Length: 266
Image (cartoon, rainbow, N blue to C red; front, side, top):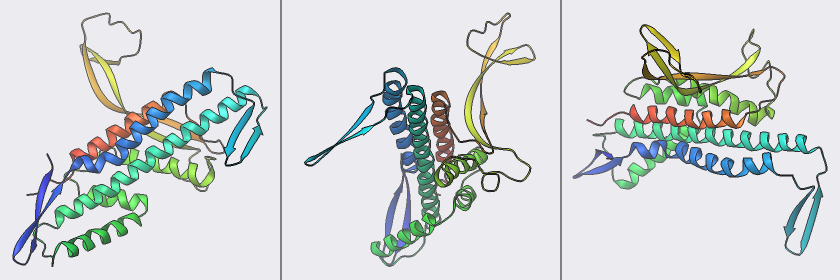
Protein backbone atom coordinates (compact mmCIF):
# COMPACT_ATOMS: atom_id res chain seq x y z
CA UNK A 1 0.00 0.00 0.00
CA UNK A 2 1.32 3.49 -0.81
CA UNK A 3 2.31 5.61 2.17
CA UNK A 4 0.83 9.08 2.55
CA UNK A 5 2.18 12.32 4.00
CA UNK A 6 0.60 15.72 4.43
CA UNK A 7 2.08 19.07 3.46
CA UNK A 8 0.63 22.21 4.98
CA UNK A 9 -0.96 24.91 2.88
CA UNK A 10 -2.54 27.92 4.60
CA UNK A 11 -6.11 26.88 5.34
CA UNK A 12 -5.81 23.20 4.34
CA UNK A 13 -3.48 20.24 3.93
CA UNK A 14 -2.18 18.59 0.75
CA UNK A 15 -1.96 14.79 0.77
CA UNK A 16 0.93 13.15 -1.11
CA UNK A 17 0.97 9.41 -1.77
CA UNK A 18 4.35 7.66 -1.69
CA UNK A 19 4.76 4.30 -3.39
CA UNK A 20 8.03 2.32 -2.95
CA UNK A 21 7.16 0.32 -6.08
CA UNK A 22 7.56 3.54 -8.07
CA UNK A 23 11.12 3.84 -6.77
CA UNK A 24 12.21 0.41 -8.01
CA UNK A 25 10.17 0.53 -11.23
CA UNK A 26 12.97 1.91 -13.50
CA UNK A 27 15.40 -0.82 -12.45
CA UNK A 28 12.79 -3.58 -12.59
CA UNK A 29 11.65 -2.45 -16.03
CA UNK A 30 15.29 -2.67 -17.15
CA UNK A 31 15.57 -6.20 -15.72
CA UNK A 32 12.43 -7.39 -17.49
CA UNK A 33 13.21 -5.65 -20.79
CA UNK A 34 16.80 -6.82 -21.04
CA UNK A 35 16.05 -10.41 -20.03
CA UNK A 36 13.16 -10.51 -22.50
CA UNK A 37 15.17 -9.15 -25.42
CA UNK A 38 18.34 -11.12 -24.72
CA UNK A 39 16.49 -14.39 -24.20
CA UNK A 40 14.99 -13.99 -27.68
CA UNK A 41 17.98 -12.64 -29.59
CA UNK A 42 20.92 -14.49 -28.06
CA UNK A 43 19.88 -17.95 -29.32
CA UNK A 44 19.55 -16.49 -32.83
CA UNK A 45 23.13 -15.22 -32.69
CA UNK A 46 24.58 -18.36 -31.09
CA UNK A 47 22.79 -21.09 -33.03
CA UNK A 48 21.98 -20.13 -36.62
CA UNK A 49 24.25 -19.08 -39.49
CA UNK A 50 24.67 -15.32 -39.67
CA UNK A 51 23.65 -13.62 -42.95
CA UNK A 52 26.47 -12.35 -45.14
CA UNK A 53 24.45 -9.29 -46.12
CA UNK A 54 22.70 -6.73 -43.92
CA UNK A 55 19.71 -5.10 -45.62
CA UNK A 56 18.51 -1.58 -44.82
CA UNK A 57 15.26 -0.44 -46.39
CA UNK A 58 14.73 3.32 -46.65
CA UNK A 59 12.02 5.29 -48.40
CA UNK A 60 12.76 4.79 -52.10
CA UNK A 61 16.18 3.33 -51.31
CA UNK A 62 17.55 -0.12 -50.49
CA UNK A 63 20.99 -0.49 -48.96
CA UNK A 64 22.98 -3.72 -48.70
CA UNK A 65 26.01 -3.99 -46.42
CA UNK A 66 28.33 -6.96 -46.89
CA UNK A 67 29.52 -8.73 -43.73
CA UNK A 68 31.65 -11.66 -44.87
CA UNK A 69 33.91 -11.97 -41.83
CA UNK A 70 34.53 -15.19 -39.96
CA UNK A 71 31.26 -16.53 -38.53
CA UNK A 72 32.70 -17.16 -35.07
CA UNK A 73 34.31 -13.71 -34.90
CA UNK A 74 31.06 -12.03 -35.96
CA UNK A 75 29.04 -14.16 -33.56
CA UNK A 76 31.30 -13.17 -30.66
CA UNK A 77 31.19 -9.49 -31.63
CA UNK A 78 27.39 -9.43 -31.83
CA UNK A 79 26.97 -11.39 -28.60
CA UNK A 80 29.33 -9.07 -26.70
CA UNK A 81 27.53 -6.02 -28.06
CA UNK A 82 24.12 -7.35 -27.03
CA UNK A 83 25.17 -8.29 -23.50
CA UNK A 84 27.06 -5.00 -23.00
CA UNK A 85 23.97 -3.03 -24.07
CA UNK A 86 21.91 -5.10 -21.66
CA UNK A 87 24.28 -4.36 -18.79
CA UNK A 88 24.27 -0.66 -19.64
CA UNK A 89 20.47 -0.68 -19.45
CA UNK A 90 20.56 -2.40 -16.04
CA UNK A 91 23.01 0.21 -14.73
CA UNK A 92 20.88 3.02 -16.17
CA UNK A 93 17.80 1.58 -14.47
CA UNK A 94 19.67 1.44 -11.17
CA UNK A 95 20.65 5.10 -11.53
CA UNK A 96 17.04 6.12 -12.24
CA UNK A 97 15.77 4.15 -9.25
CA UNK A 98 18.30 5.89 -7.00
CA UNK A 99 17.09 9.25 -8.29
CA UNK A 100 13.52 8.22 -7.47
CA UNK A 101 14.65 7.11 -4.01
CA UNK A 102 16.28 10.49 -3.42
CA UNK A 103 13.04 12.25 -4.38
CA UNK A 104 11.08 9.86 -2.15
CA UNK A 105 13.35 10.57 0.83
CA UNK A 106 13.13 14.31 0.27
CA UNK A 107 9.33 14.19 0.04
CA UNK A 108 9.11 12.32 3.35
CA UNK A 109 11.28 15.02 4.93
CA UNK A 110 8.83 17.66 3.66
CA UNK A 111 5.99 16.55 5.94
CA UNK A 112 4.50 19.46 7.80
CA UNK A 113 6.37 21.89 5.53
CA UNK A 114 4.31 24.93 4.55
CA UNK A 115 3.72 25.61 0.85
CA UNK A 116 1.66 28.30 -0.85
CA UNK A 117 -0.32 25.94 -3.07
CA UNK A 118 -0.01 22.82 -5.27
CA UNK A 119 2.00 24.72 -7.88
CA UNK A 120 4.52 25.75 -5.23
CA UNK A 121 4.83 22.10 -4.18
CA UNK A 122 5.41 21.03 -7.79
CA UNK A 123 8.11 23.69 -8.18
CA UNK A 124 9.88 22.44 -5.05
CA UNK A 125 9.83 18.82 -6.24
CA UNK A 126 10.97 19.77 -9.74
CA UNK A 127 13.91 21.65 -8.25
CA UNK A 128 14.81 18.55 -6.25
CA UNK A 129 14.63 16.40 -9.41
CA UNK A 130 16.95 18.78 -11.26
CA UNK A 131 19.48 18.83 -8.43
CA UNK A 132 19.41 15.03 -8.07
CA UNK A 133 19.89 14.52 -11.80
CA UNK A 134 23.12 16.55 -11.64
CA UNK A 135 24.69 14.49 -8.86
CA UNK A 136 27.51 12.16 -9.76
CA UNK A 137 26.79 8.54 -8.92
CA UNK A 138 28.80 8.21 -5.66
CA UNK A 139 27.22 11.39 -4.26
CA UNK A 140 23.75 10.26 -5.32
CA UNK A 141 24.20 6.87 -3.69
CA UNK A 142 25.57 8.44 -0.50
CA UNK A 143 22.65 10.88 -0.31
CA UNK A 144 20.11 8.10 -0.78
CA UNK A 145 21.85 5.91 1.79
CA UNK A 146 21.81 8.71 4.37
CA UNK A 147 18.02 8.98 4.05
CA UNK A 148 17.20 5.29 4.52
CA UNK A 149 16.10 3.54 7.70
CA UNK A 150 19.35 1.55 7.73
CA UNK A 151 22.41 1.55 5.48
CA UNK A 152 22.43 -0.46 2.25
CA UNK A 153 24.12 -3.85 2.53
CA UNK A 154 24.73 -3.80 -1.24
CA UNK A 155 26.36 -0.34 -1.22
CA UNK A 156 29.69 -1.62 -2.71
CA UNK A 157 27.79 -3.50 -5.41
CA UNK A 158 25.94 -0.34 -6.48
CA UNK A 159 29.31 1.39 -6.91
CA UNK A 160 30.75 -1.62 -8.71
CA UNK A 161 27.99 -1.60 -11.34
CA UNK A 162 28.60 2.09 -12.00
CA UNK A 163 32.36 1.68 -12.40
CA UNK A 164 31.87 -0.97 -15.07
CA UNK A 165 29.21 1.16 -16.76
CA UNK A 166 31.63 4.11 -16.87
CA UNK A 167 34.29 1.99 -18.54
CA UNK A 168 31.82 0.71 -21.15
CA UNK A 169 30.44 4.17 -21.86
CA UNK A 170 33.60 6.27 -21.85
CA UNK A 171 36.33 3.82 -22.93
CA UNK A 172 34.36 1.34 -25.03
CA UNK A 173 34.95 -1.28 -22.37
CA UNK A 174 38.77 -1.14 -22.52
CA UNK A 175 39.94 -1.22 -18.89
CA UNK A 176 42.34 1.61 -18.14
CA UNK A 177 44.92 1.67 -15.34
CA UNK A 178 44.47 5.42 -14.89
CA UNK A 179 40.68 5.66 -15.11
CA UNK A 180 39.16 2.39 -13.92
CA UNK A 181 41.29 0.93 -11.13
CA UNK A 182 43.13 2.21 -8.09
CA UNK A 183 46.91 2.33 -7.93
CA UNK A 184 48.36 -1.11 -7.33
CA UNK A 185 45.22 -2.89 -8.56
CA UNK A 186 45.48 -4.82 -11.81
CA UNK A 187 41.80 -5.49 -12.62
CA UNK A 188 38.39 -3.84 -12.63
CA UNK A 189 36.05 -6.03 -10.56
CA UNK A 190 32.29 -6.26 -10.95
CA UNK A 191 30.72 -7.46 -7.70
CA UNK A 192 27.24 -8.94 -8.16
CA UNK A 193 24.81 -10.04 -5.43
CA UNK A 194 23.84 -13.69 -5.58
CA UNK A 195 21.84 -16.19 -3.56
CA UNK A 196 23.69 -19.33 -2.51
CA UNK A 197 22.42 -22.68 -1.26
CA UNK A 198 24.38 -24.47 1.45
CA UNK A 199 24.08 -27.87 3.07
CA UNK A 200 24.52 -27.77 6.84
CA UNK A 201 25.83 -31.14 8.04
CA UNK A 202 26.55 -30.99 11.73
CA UNK A 203 28.85 -28.03 12.21
CA UNK A 204 29.91 -27.94 8.56
CA UNK A 205 28.36 -25.81 5.81
CA UNK A 206 29.08 -26.80 2.21
CA UNK A 207 27.88 -24.85 -0.83
CA UNK A 208 25.37 -26.86 -2.82
CA UNK A 209 26.34 -27.37 -6.47
CA UNK A 210 24.55 -29.21 -9.33
CA UNK A 211 24.89 -32.99 -9.02
CA UNK A 212 25.99 -32.88 -5.39
CA UNK A 213 24.69 -35.67 -3.14
CA UNK A 214 24.55 -35.28 0.62
CA UNK A 215 26.21 -38.25 2.30
CA UNK A 216 24.48 -37.61 5.61
CA UNK A 217 21.40 -35.86 6.95
CA UNK A 218 21.62 -32.17 6.11
CA UNK A 219 19.67 -28.92 6.30
CA UNK A 220 19.44 -26.65 3.26
CA UNK A 221 20.34 -23.01 3.96
CA UNK A 222 19.79 -20.00 1.69
CA UNK A 223 22.32 -17.19 2.07
CA UNK A 224 23.22 -13.98 0.28
CA UNK A 225 26.68 -13.74 -1.20
CA UNK A 226 28.50 -12.10 -4.08
CA UNK A 227 29.98 -13.15 -7.39
CA UNK A 228 33.03 -11.25 -8.60
CA UNK A 229 33.85 -10.90 -12.30
CA UNK A 230 37.34 -9.52 -13.00
CA UNK A 231 38.43 -7.57 -16.08
CA UNK A 232 42.24 -7.18 -16.16
CA UNK A 233 43.78 -3.84 -17.08
CA UNK A 234 44.19 -3.64 -20.85
CA UNK A 235 41.41 -6.15 -21.55
CA UNK A 236 37.98 -5.35 -22.97
CA UNK A 237 34.90 -5.96 -20.86
CA UNK A 238 32.75 -8.85 -22.05
CA UNK A 239 30.07 -10.96 -20.40
CA UNK A 240 28.74 -14.48 -20.74
CA UNK A 241 25.01 -15.16 -20.90
CA UNK A 242 25.25 -16.72 -17.44
CA UNK A 243 27.02 -13.60 -16.14
CA UNK A 244 24.21 -11.44 -17.47
CA UNK A 245 21.49 -13.55 -15.87
CA UNK A 246 23.30 -13.19 -12.54
CA UNK A 247 23.64 -9.41 -13.04
CA UNK A 248 19.91 -9.07 -13.78
CA UNK A 249 19.03 -11.11 -10.70
CA UNK A 250 21.55 -9.11 -8.67
CA UNK A 251 19.90 -5.88 -9.82
CA UNK A 252 16.60 -7.19 -8.46
CA UNK A 253 18.26 -7.99 -5.12
CA UNK A 254 19.83 -4.54 -4.89
CA UNK A 255 16.71 -2.50 -5.59
CA UNK A 256 14.54 -4.80 -3.46
CA UNK A 257 16.76 -3.98 -0.51
CA UNK A 258 16.53 -0.30 -1.43
CA UNK A 259 12.71 -0.40 -1.43
CA UNK A 260 12.62 -2.21 1.90
CA UNK A 261 14.74 0.44 3.61
CA UNK A 262 12.95 3.56 2.40
CA UNK A 263 11.81 5.82 5.25
CA UNK A 264 8.30 5.33 6.59
CA UNK A 265 6.31 8.53 7.19
CA UNK A 266 5.28 9.14 10.82
